[in-house]
Length: 191
Ligand SMILES: [Zn+2]
Image (cartoon, rainbow, N blue to C red; front, top):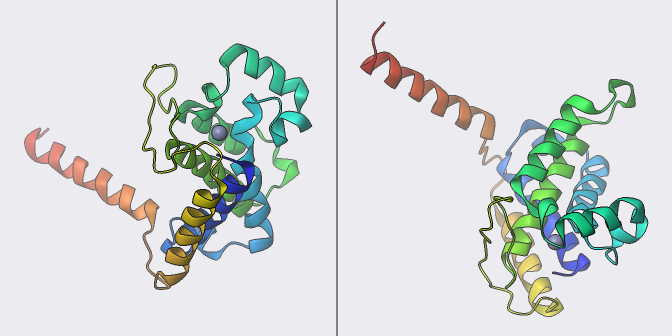
């Protein structure tokens, strides 16, 4: 997928996450933080390709990553995304005071890139280092700009049409699943 396709797809994902209120930060965050965050996250996975935008800006990182893992390798995996999440929340110096809405939008942009690449014929090694490639080739050609624009614009329109205050609230969804599991354990394994 082209950089333009990834940028459009990430903006559609951000509007959808905002409308669905996936997290409080994405629901109430500042667009001036979230838009740059999501765009940055959407470009970063292609740092494994030296002629991509992040690859050209950070050649010092891009060339070794490309030689070690190849294009659409480690950086296009769940592990890379999880490491990035740990880096954002544990390793970033607290005095940098990066807003939480920007960090969450950045992580959303990164995962939107992986999902968008799944829609192309090459797919992505989502469970890297396992050699499985996840692929749902709705976009037949790797650089079919028209199809990419169409999918991204259709997603943006769908996201805009979602009713406000839908409140998907991922945190409470997880919370209720964990409570359910606890209850089941208490029922079947009484102490
Ligand atoms: Zn990619």
